[in-house]
Structure formats: structure tokens, C-alpha cells
Length: 218
Length: 242
Image 1 (cartoon, each protein chain N blue to C red):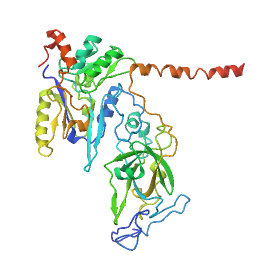
Image 2 (image 1 turned 90 degrees about the vertical axis):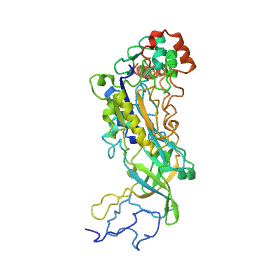
Image 3 (image 1 turned 180 degrees about the vertical axis):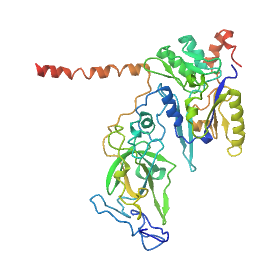
């Protein structure tokens, strides 16, 4: 055992309070900390005031490499999202379903805001601390515009004995999305007329392409 | 015909895992749709010609968290208004099975867009959808499974005991028994239109909080339009009512 013999409470590596209320040691002293370029940590930083946590979904398995190629599961949970409380949404002027940016000292990413009653602000050592919840099932190629993995934000730290990651607590900031909207809204319900219209469009598009090629060949 | 089969959906046990939604697509070989997160875990956002079963999520805003799950699907009405309307528009577009009571849209019969609009309006639960090819589509009660004695795919997939399927009499008995149990805790608990439909939901709150068409606005068959159509039809069509 690297730490022990008795159980002890330590605060997480990144936490919104400066002192461990139970002892003078804030974080576990037996944990090795990495010293790489991305191993930047922060505590009580006004630039990153919110506590973030990560969790799984029923629909996807771990990083989603197996389940994100399954159309019925991607249909059910298509995009990276961040769950936040009504109070925090009001504070930052965020609307439900909006694309927002989440930043930690290690990186930033976008996610769809899910404003919900399921998440409530904490009262930690007399101050109100807001919580946001993220999943880590998305990233890279599939699905298109699915978003990135929350692992962009998380610190590389584990427990003293087995290095089981401490991805359940870290600090982030959330901002309204600065980028212009790329994403298209889902098409209206398939009325036969509406579906008849898009059909000729793809035909029309490829047509101009071969024409210039033929000209250049000539 | 008064007997046949029925579903009992005990939403007090539903965890919104959406096993039923995916199992429906798997058995009926419906493709996945391109969806976006709209600020809710519910997806696809609505029923479509490729989505016959969708678990609707609704969160009541207030101090206390009320998160309701509603596995929406065709109710297989005992006397289906869609059949009455479709009969005059495209013959054989809607079929009702004598033995089970399943209401089935015939995939071989095409219907005009304006006729479909009337069929859709006749449905008190907003279920019928039409594909680009002009064919109506919705839940079939997994007719191909139940005629072989299997459970519908959604019922088979349900891991929590929310979805039940069986003889109508047994299902009504089960629903009423469970309602009596639940009433002790949730005073507003109700069954949705148990006398009119074959998919009976047990809800613990105002049905409108689950979905706007969780229960019929009017009792089936008494809208003015429908009443008129009924009167104009010959009596022999009504032998199976009651």
C-alpha cells in the first residue's frame, strides 16, 4: 500500500476550496504527479470556477468505439453533451440545446447544453459551487459532428496504489459558443412533397462537376 | 373481437433504457435516423415512418424533480378511427386483424398526401406517419412475431418489467391490479383510455405531463368529423364494435 494504513479523506487534485476541512493535507501526498506539457492543474482559480464530473451512458460503451458505429445507438445518443443546472444556465445565459464551449487548463471542446433539474449547485464550505456533468463516449471520426471526448479536459491523476483515474472531479469553465453554427437543423417530418424535392437536388449537384472536367480534357 | 391481445405498459417501472425503441428497429429492420442532441436525452425527437416506437422524456420544471418516461407507440384502438377514414380513401390501407385486434398499415397500399393528412388527423394519439414513397407506417404489434406465439420485440427486450403483452382480459386485470397498488403512493395514478385501446399505460401523474397526446383529447369516435363519418357508413361495418 502506497498510502495508509488508515483511511483518510483528501480533496481532489483540482478543487474549489483551498483547505481540506478535515486535515492540513489537501491532496493525497502518495500520488505521483506527471510533469508533462499538458499536466497543468489548478485550484480555486477564478478562470475555472465550476466543478466537472464525467460519467457513462446506457447507449454507449466506454470511449464508444464499438457503439458509435451502431446506427440505432448513435441515433439515440448522437452528440457530446454537458448537463448543467438551471441556476448555472441562468448565470451564464445558456439556453437548453445550445452549443457551448467547455474549457479546462488542459484544453477545450464543445458540447450541447442540457439544462436540467437533475443537476443542482453544491454548497461547499459556505460558497455556492456549480456542477457540470459530461460523458466521455464521443470523439474523432464517428459520428460526424458528434463532438469530442471529455478526456480532453480531465487531469491525468489516479489513486496512489493503482492509478485508477480521478476523472470524477476537476475544474472547468463554460462559455457560450463563439464559433458560427455549422450544424444543420434536422429536416422537417417527411411529408411526401418535402421528400420529393431533395431527390432532384443531389442529381443536380454532381452534374456541374463532370462538365468542367470534360472541358479541361478537351 | 372484443377480446384479442393487449399491451400493458407500467411506466412506474420504466428507466428509459430505450431497449424497446432499439428492439423495435432491429426486428422491423428500420434504419437509424440522423439526429442531433436537442437538449434532451430523447432521440429521435418524434415518431417517423422509420421510428415506430420512441421513449419520450419530459422533465417537469419546478422545485422537485419529476422526470417522466413515456414509451410512445400505436395504441391499436379497439375501433380504430384511422381505419374508418382510410377505408374511403385507399381501400385496404389499414387492416384490423380479427384474432388479435392488431391495427396494421398495409405496406403495399399507397395513399395520397392529402388523404394521409385526414388519416393522421383522425388519430387521437398522433401516430400515423408516411414514407417518401407514400406508404403509411407505424407499429404493427409485431404481427409477424405474435402470430407465431412470440412476444412483440419491445416487450421481449424490456428488462424492467414495464412492457407486458397478452390476452386483453389478462392485461386489463393486471393493469387494474397494479393501478390499485400504485394508487396508495401516487394518488393521481391513472390508466390511459383502457376501454378504447389495446396499449394501456399506467401513469402516476397528469397524462399531459408525459406527452400531449398520451390520452385522447376526445373519447374515440366522438369528434364531429368522425361522428359524421360513422353515421354515413352502413351499419354492417360496426358489427365488431362493443
